[in-house]
Figure 1 (tube, rainbow, N blue to C red):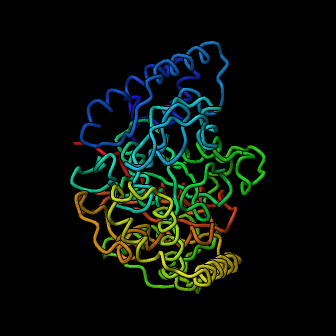
Figure 2 (cartoon, rainbow, N blue to C red):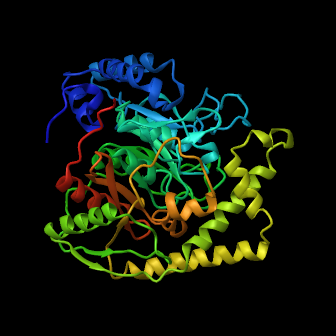
Length: 465
């Protein structure tokens, strides 16, 4: 593998090693990243806001390294925060013209984890409005474009995080994922994107999709994702549902490989998710890469209930509640597709919603049973490569399970860890990814599986243009 010489292209692990040897400084790295932001962000449109204090914070990190007293695991590494999470001193606009411009007074737990580890926050990245959809645009900031091809979408809802990662605007990016919003933009942008086990990374304040949503790392390497996860996955009393985990370095065991692991190649998630021919070839290629490293791969069906029906209700009710709590005079400012889904689902009865919750638990039970036999699940991540950035949103309820998230939302319902890892480029030079999932709370296994695929595939970085 070619080692980058431009600091902006380096992994967080590489940067930290160079900081420790005094061969590179956080200020030099930030300056290299800011040069790329100035060059590419005018058309990529990854940022909702930039941090005017980033250079000062990089200087403070440099002083700590020079004194031999780094602050934590990520000291001096440029990072970004999705604009669904609070960053103290900045408004949380959520991609919406309906939200206030009042700055947040405290950091979200995931942000606090990065700051306590010494990361330098470059800014806040764009999101689809309230994280409701997968195409990468919003009423407040417009279209965020894919650094691999400006005519293609970055995906969503962590659109700016995907774009920033692919454009090398720093190595570490926080996304959030309620139905695939970390994994889909990661897949479209050639990144690694982890939706962790529910409760691993604390959340506060809760968003529209609190019962199925997680924050997660979006990075250019699997090891960086594990490193970032180590800083984010810390107990926080503000979230009553987060796990009381002891701090750990999630890179431990990541190189142990997949020899002897049982891997289920899954094509059904309670329905038949669509997948184009190129995606099918990529999926089979990934299965072969795991087999060549000693994994035992076989096709299997976890026998889930129809996850479209379950997630559609969870998604629709959340959006209906969001519209109902938006002041009436501001509702015309909402994304028309969001309002459409809310109107369709807003009349759902409590009995129907509780029925969906019962089916969600049934799906989680089925996957827990399935993982008694299989260590890992391997699926496609998206039905196609990134589609057109300017494509209008038509029939969003149908698009959800057909075009956007048919391969990803099941694992939000079951709350188990799932990771997107790039494994190939298609005939047009766009990244294609697969998804690796493991049993609830076995985040360590998804890192091992993803790292094994990454070592074998070696997908290059984007070349924006």
